[in-house]
Image 1 (cartoon, rainbow, N blue to C red):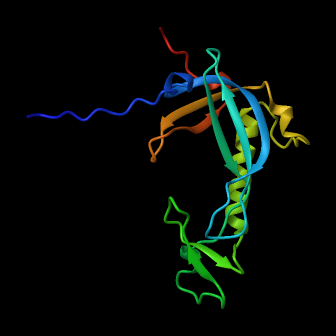
Image 2: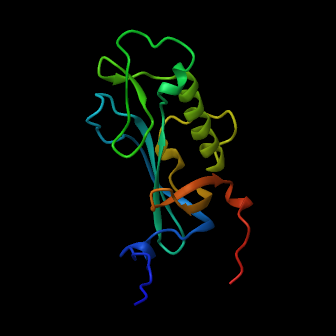
Amino acid sequence: MKLVSVKRAFNGEDKLIPLGESVAIIADAGETFAKQSSHWSDRTPQLEVKFENAEGQTLTHWYNLKGYKTKADYEGQAVPKGVTFESSDNGNEMYAIKGGARIESPEKTAECERIVGEFLNDAGIGAGEEIEDVNDITGNQIGLMVRDGARGFREVHYTKLASKVKAVEA
């Protein structure tokens, strides 16, 4: 007997922005925190952004606003007293923990800020401009590249200026 593997259909898949490049608007944006972990006491501050295309399909993306040190950051040097390493329930990051909280990495936080800054530019905020309220970007057009992520969920791979999205022929 031959058996054929079939990818499980997600009931709401037709409600998600499709794979590939597309143009969407920023339907909603706000500051939030990642869910609580049983491995550390802190929660990662995030920018939560909901994208919506002309067909009403949506996708939400969370941008981390802080980065944390991992075991790899201590390679070749002594680990400070009281530092332990833990991974999240769904990863193998081996975050550096002290006093129950992850240790912030200024370099990784700067990388998070760069990524958010590029997203804001793609959303039409001029280079070097600051915004006071994340809702200032609501309604702005943006280009998206959507893919199936490593955990099997659809995700925003990157953003770009809406004007840079190649027209898709029907």
